Image (cartoon, rainbow, N blue to C red; front, side, top):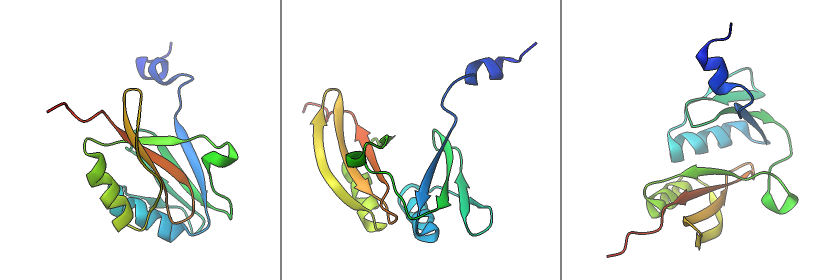
Length: 127
């Protein structure tokens, strides 16, 4: 007999891994910009949890970029402009400025190891 947690998680996305050529800079960026905490497993791997999807970074010279066909992981923000400021203050580089899409707005950024992610929010409320 399986428990209900197994049924809820069965065949669902559970973990994501990113390559990072500079693990310390990458983990420092996500901690500063999004308050992520990491568990280090030696010098070549660090994991994160409780961020909507658990995952980790492993040491490698590659990175994920949409232009190369990589999947785009998208974070949510209640305040897109404020989050974009935190991303740039932490050392991220905005590679697509805020733009509208059906259902919301978003921007794309690259963290210090070059992995591309995005942040989205709902449309601004009508005043």
